Each structure stands twice: as structure tokens, then as C-alpha cells.
Image (cartoon, rainbow, N blue to C red; front, side, top):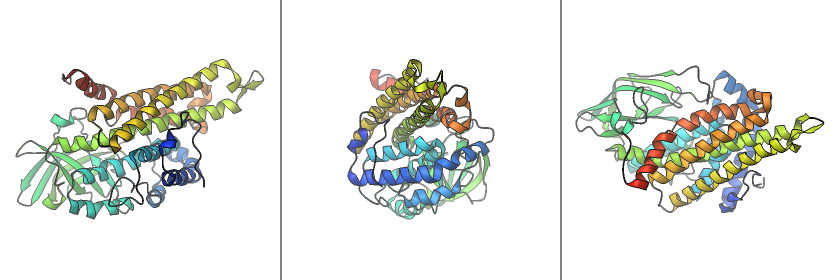
Length: 392
């Protein structure tokens, strides 16, 4: 089907895309509208993940685009950003699944794995045969992961023994492998490991009671004398710099997801405002409602311009930590404001799932916090501005 620019892409950033990219985006949008949007409210309410979406996502190429070994056609970081936007525009949990699988898990192997590891794992993960998770955050270590990891790795011959705990690990209740980041007892450096979840001593327990991204299956992980062969150590991950290189790319993607989440809420509010009548006419014709919608669109447009530029810089190899950090901090803050205005435009109906805006409103809270809080990303940018670190 032909690609139609979103009305919320007010300055036509989709014009940066090539024809094959627009065609692929149109196919993804069509599938999301037909197969995903009708089911997500039920899965969100039950806090379950719709596993039936994994294979179609793989068949559409969504898990393949970023890597030379698997990409079905040449594509740009701007296009991959629009893919994240389209996913989150319909449901942020499905977008988060893809972000974990494609960005964090596959990204770790692509960034820090050997050529042999890339060839072995990336095609299997792109096809959906192998589902991945990313184990960095711990119960007592989040923002201070660069220094504060407590999970340890001890080498014994050609085997590594991992011990520790991880928390908030997306996909981890059903993943086949988890990328575990642990501190080497010998040199104190952070190293990465591809850990099959069937390994003895590995256990994952679902985190219950979430109010945001309820479909995402986050887990607490315990590692008790988990034995991993040297062949499953990421061969180019010898310090936290490798972890940071992965996060640099995925923070930009989360910023795109934030724009998509804001658009999802905004579009829901526009639909509601054009249908809901008060005082004898649709509320869309009232000045205060139009003011809310225009403020939403302003945030979306400003954020979209920022993330598009960041992705262009990524494509030219110019992206630095502070660029991704500013985009993530700004876009998620603007998203949080936007979903609140969109919910306000829907009045009392904005707090029920029927009109969709409530789901985006709740899910925005998780995007605001994960992949680096606003405060930590602010400090990354502040260091770049001043030349002085203010992290402690």
C-alpha cells in the first residue's frame, strides 16, 4: 500500500526517507493497524505479551534492518528511527520488545561481538528464532552501572563463572539468551556474556504490579555459579566503554519511541475531540481544546526535528554520547508533558483504555525513566558543555 505521511509529521520529516524505506514503513503501519492495535488494550490490562507478533515483526524486517548480516535492503538510521516511532505510536510495549531484541541484545553482539559471534547469532535473532534480553541494571545499581555493578565474572580456564542479580530486564521471562554485563574479578573491568537462559543457575522471575508498559515482561534475574564458555564472552567488550557504545545508539532509538508515544496520545486526543460533543458541537471547535492539541503538536514537532538530526549524525558517524543524551532527555520530557495534555483533552474518558490515550499516558512513565533518567542524561550533556563532570 502507498505510504501516507502522518498528519502529526507537521514539517514532513518523512521526506528524508527513500522510496524503499517509505514502502517498508507503509507495510509495517498497515500490519500494526490491522493486527496489533485491536488487541493491545486487552494484553495491556492482563499484563501479558502477545507472542504472536514476534514472527510477523521478523518477516517485516523489523528485527533485521540495523545489521549488515541481516538487512533486507540498504537503509538509514532516520528510517530505523521512524520504525521505532511507528511501533510506539501504536503500542510502546511492542516497541520496547523490539528495542530490547534489536537494539540492546542484538546491538551488544553487533557492537562488541566477534565476527564469528555476529554471524552465528544475528541472523537467528533477526528471524525471531532466538529471543534476547539485556542484563545491565541491578537491584542496587542503575544510574551508576559504570562503577557500581555487583554481578561478578571469574575466569576458570576456558569457562567464566557468573554470580549476581539483575532487575528490570525486559523480555527476560521468555528470552532464549540474555546479554549479561558483569565485573571481572581479576581486573575490575566490565565484560559482556551471551548467556543461554537454560544454563544451570540462571533464574528469571516476572516483576508484578507495574502501572506502565504492562505488556513488557520485566524480570528479576539471579545468577548462581552460572558457567559460560569463553566462546560466549563478547570478544570486544573489555570495559564499560563497550556497554556505553550500545547505549549511545539505543538512547537515540528511545527518543524516537518517545516521539511515537506522544504521537499515539495526540492522535487519540484528536480523534476524541472531533467526535465528542459538548454545548451542541464537537469539543474540537472549542478554543481551549485546540490550545491543548496545538501544544501537543508543538512538542512533537520539536522532538521529531531533534531525533531526525541525531539519526542523520549517527549515519555520518558523528554521534556522541551527549547528542543521544540530549535527545533522550528532551524527547521524553516533552512526551510526558504531551501525553498529559492529550489525556486532559479527553476529560474523564482519558483514564479508561477504551479511548487509548490512558495507555499512552501510563506507558510514557517507563520511557521517561529507562535507558538513562533525565537527570543522568542531563549530566552527560552538562559535562560536554562545561568540561566538568558533576555525577557525584
